[in-house]
Length: 88
Image (spheres, rainbow, N blue to C red):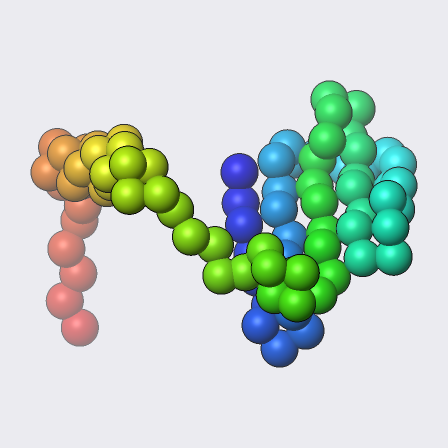
């Protein structure tokens, strides 16, 4: 999943599935859902901050889970993988 927010345009874009969108449905003037052949591919929300969707806040319990799941795992993977070094 990929979340992208454009603060100048106040647009929140949530991508769930890669692939071409085969159908777009507008559920209101500011919510558009793009469907792929596998299900919901993306959601676009206009005026996201105005409707209280931004900034996204996580519960403290969820923050620790996200930290454990992604950041620590990333550090462990990074330690195991030796990236080539380049000098300029």
